[in-house]
Amino acid sequence: MNEETRKVALSGASGNIGRILRVELPRLGHALRSCGGRTALSPLHDVEDVMHGDLRKPEVVDRLLDGIDVLVHMAGTSVERPLPEIIENNLVALHQVYEGAVRHGVRRVVFASSNHAFGMHPVETKLRSDATYRPDGFYGLSKMWGEGMARLYWDKHGVESVCLRIGSAEPAPANRRHLSTWLGPEDLIELVRCAIEAPDVGYAEVWGISNNTRAYWDVSQPNAIGYEPRQDAESWASAVEHVAAHPDPLSARFQGGAFVVDGYSRARG
Image (cartoon, rainbow, N blue to C red; front, top):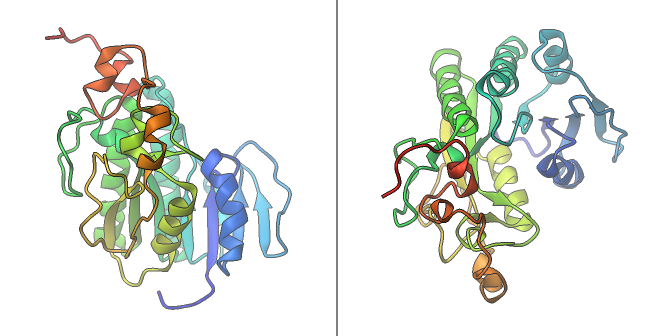
């Protein structure tokens, strides 16, 4: 992908990350079509088309992807919920999106994966991009499956995918866990820019965090999209390192934090 201007579709445009990207992607020179799910949107830029609808429906996906080069897929349930709900919103919709990408010749999907596909790793373990999946709940499980779907559609259909294993995308760190998982606003924009513009990635997985001193995930090695984070949560350490992410001590033992506590029934040693 060497074109300076791309036609980019953004799903999940009414979510926390989506609202940021609606502002920033046109500033990067890309024409944008934003989909807000159930939420009707008003255009923010002259180069933005807007729509809304249920991505489990092929006709909605067709409207979103017609004439598109790259889809930035941020839609879906982003908290722990019962498995049937997670499957509907995070997997059925994702399958429809990839089928639509094949139909419309979309060249790349930027998939919002998550650190929670690895949340049961102990906090002492620093993970590389080839780490073993250890989801901390049904949400994390859906992201593990989502990365598998992304790989499948590259291997069998030639749809490129960049899976962004997003940490804690917040304006600033708010608790001790964020010192390891934070993705700052400037790095978020750079991460997505690289995922859209990098040439010939095929299938790639990238940790979506800043260059945090206490990072659980190794961002020191070169990655397929050339992402080089610059922000560091350590600048907020004195203000937040005494703030627990969750009152249960279990959340401090595993990388997934509070997600680990939800539904945990194993005997605690």
